[in-house]
Structure formats: structure tokens, C-alpha cells
Length: 345
Ligand SMILES: NC(=O)c1ccc[n+]([C@@H]2O[C@H](COP(=O)([O-])OP(=O)(O)OC[C@H]3O[C@@H](n4cnc5c(N)ncnc54)[C@H](OP(=O)(O)O)[C@@H]3O)[C@@H](O)[C@H]2O)c1
Image (tube, rainbow, N blue to C red):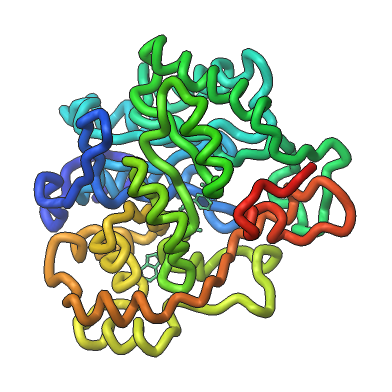
């Protein structure tokens, strides 16, 4: 495809062949989306170009966020895509409110900015990116701590959630959801929400399957969206620890990949779709994002292969969230309520 010009690719995937999931509202969401977090590696222009290419090969679902710093560039592409004849209702666009915009009135401001940047008049899904209202500069070290960091306080989260609900009332967003939540936090939200979350975005890959949270979410009619579905092999060094394992080097994944003649990354994506979570793999490289999409429509993993992958969970969380810790002497596990209760302030 000529750079900077949108045309439907001849070697792409028919979007109607891509699996989808149905939310509690009856809305259908494509069962794979394109991640758009370029991190330190890819500029806003490169990510926007990937969005153009991804839609041209058949993607209809994008996972955006204001903090990724590229929505203004993605918006230019979306405008062009829709001018080319793709209808707004054929696309599924998610975005997220960042942690420094949880305050009274801020959620509407943040959503309005995202809509302006993306050149849309509504979002399909708007998520609270993290349950902690803490600002930290993009790209900061995992050891950096904000002096203003705050723990999870349910009353405050509900003030944010009420603003999310208001966005639905106003018609600016069709669904609202959560991200980086835990079971005890979700229990409180489900108790108190007027409009319940349609999706929960959570880290999910073969080495981090989160079976309990996954089951809780599904049992409550919430669709899980899995981030870092390939185990984020290119994440910055600052987000790595010595204990981290590498999904795409796991012998089980490698063996299945050889059997299907695909890259181990693609096995992770196929596994995710067949497990019935929605992966949002990232790549700006055409052969990679095309392969990820194409293989959700052909040559499924067998039940035995799905079972084998279920057996390689290592409970290895990659995005630990250290920058959200709010007092001295804590460890990142405190953010994830590993004892089944919200960590006290
Ligand atoms: N809600 C949240 O808090 C949260 C947190 C993290 C991420 N996310 C979302 O999840 C998305 C995905 O996460 P991620 O980017 O960290 O991790 P990921 O999708 O697990 O991994 C992305 C990396 O995998 C490689 N890759 C992709 N497809 C491949 C293929 N077919 N063959 C070989 N390598 C392949 C790419 O390498 P190349 O760079 O070489 O192409 C890319 O850099 C993000 O973009 C973002 O939208 C959300």
C-alpha cells in the first residue's frame, strides 16, 4: 500500500470472517484488536501508519489510550478510512482515561479530548486505565515514586465511575469498562455501579493466565480483553525483572508453532482467541499484524494444544505497576490484592 493512502488490501482478511464476542448489551466486538502503545520504540506517526495498514488488511478493533500520545495521529487515519467508505459502526474503538484525570469533571474533559483527537463523535468502549489516581511521567523508571501517590479508595473510584456512567448517558461512549482491576475491587464496583463494566482489560498471556480473575470476570458477564498477549517481548528494559519468563521461547509454544508453521507469537494470539479473551497484539510491521489477524480465522489449535498451553501458566506478571505504590516498604504485589482483600491504605 502506498504510504499515507488508504485502500483495502487484496491479501487481507474479510472482517466478517474474524471471530467476535457479544457483550451484555448485545453489541458485537471483534475478538482481536490492534494494540497502539508504541512505547519508546515507535513514534505516533509509525503507529498511525500501522493503524492504516491494519484496517486495510481487515482489523476493525483498535485499543487506544490518551496516554499513548498518538490519538491525534490515529484520528487523521480514521477520518481518511471513513471517507473511503468504511462506516463508523463497522469499527470498534476503545480508549482509556489516564490516572491524572480521575477528578471531578476531568473524565468528561479527557473523553472530549480523545474524541476530538480521534475525530469521532462516540467511543465504543471507554476504560478507566488504572484504579489508582496517580500521575507519573511517561517513561519514568519503575523505582520512581510520586509524592502524591494514593492507594485505591473505593469511594473515590466510584466518583470516577459515576462520570464514566454519565458519558454513556450523554451518548459519548457506548460501553464503559475497567483495566488493571482485581477481584475484590471489581466486587465493590459491581455492587455499586449503575452501569456495569462491559469489559475488563487485564494482562493475559500463556505465562500469565490469571485463571481466578478470568473466571470471575466471565461469570459476571464481563468480557476479558487481554493485554501483552504475546508477553510483550519488546517492552523497555525498565519494565523487565530477572524473574520474568518469555512466552514465545516456551518449548510448548515453540513446538506448537512448528507444528502449525507459524511464529510462536501467533500461537499466543490464537490461544487467546480460542480461550475466549480478546487479545490486542501490537506491531507496526505488516507481516506481523496481518499474520496475527489471519490466523484467528484458520487452522485452530486442537483441544490437546489448548490443554498443553493451559499447563504452562507461570503466574508471571510483566506489568507490575511499581510506580503506583503509595508508601515506603511496599512491594508491587500490594497493588494486586494477592490475599483476596484490598490492600489497606
Ligand atoms: N490496559 C493496560 O494497562 C495496558 C498495558 C499494556 C498494554 N496494553 C495494550 O496492549 C497492547 C499490546 O501489549 P504490548 O505491546 O505490550 O505487548 P504484545 O502485544 O504482547 O507484544 C508486542 C510485541 O510483539 C511482537 N509481535 C507482534 N506480533 C508478532 C508476530 N506475529 N510475530 C513476531 N512478533 C510479533 C512485536 O514486535 P515488533 O515490535 O518487532 O513488531 C511487538 O513489539 C498495547 O499496544 C496496548 O494497546 C494495555
